Amino acid sequence: MPFKRLTVMLITALAPVLWGTTYLVFTQTLPVGHPLLVGALRALPAGVLLMLLGAGLPPRDKLLRLLVLGLANIGLFFALLFVAAQRLPGGVAATIMSAQPLVVALLAWPLLARKPRPAQLAAALAGSVGVGLLILGPAARLDAVGVAASLAAALSMAMGTVLIERWGRIGTPLAVAAWQLALGGLALLPVALFVEGLPPALTARNAVGFAYLIVIGTALGYWLWVRGIGVLGADVTFLSLLSPLTATVLGALVLGEWFTPVQTGGAVLILGATVAGMAFSRRARAAVSTAQRSASDGQTPTR
Figure 1 (cartoon, rainbow, N blue to C red):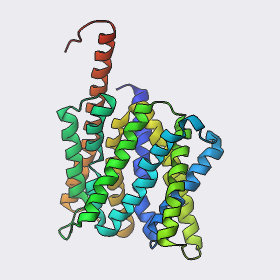
Figure 2: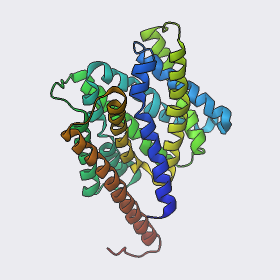
Figure 3: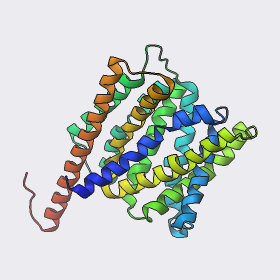
């Protein structure tokens, strides 16, 4: 693997690691009774911040595509995520949404003309099993609406990830991250205010939590993620499996929720699936590129 690509992969992996801190920050510093509003206030200011840092306003001719990305990756995703969190134990919701790499591999077939290989599907399924071992407990209970919301959330962000690659350079990574955060947050804000109303007066602890979540967990995280998709493609979604791993590690270190032997096995499985999934995805992309070059030269690709 070229050094530059490996460097981009490691930097991109920082995004799901930062997202893995969200649960701890939310439960310890933010108003947990207003999850939709927290989601909107997480996205909209982050998008505005990135626009002020150089992204500028979104171009009119690309506004529709950017709105679709904003809804898929931010607005709709956050809404479904919080519905699932209200109706399911966090471990169950995270396990279901860990199917996102598998969904991306399937969506890449019709949308990117990239047929998933059995090894890619196996890596995605292994990652989901790893998350299950990591955070599912014997007291897990399933709610039909919560399960549907979790699956829809995985589908929503997977679709947004694939569309970013399909539509190519709508803008720089900074601009695409800024515009979808702003548009997604703007779409979610009125819904949150209608459903939940205004939160109580913010405390100093709330301000610190919001500052971290907006600047580090969202603005920086989504910029790194979009940048990674531009270089590595939609299969970068395998790195998202690092998010529940990070959340569980923080739970052990900060809240005293230490790993059991089964959880340790799950963590190892997640890391293995992430590395294997990225390697298999790179080979699949290389095979497609070779086939396309051969077709353009009027030759039959060799295998």
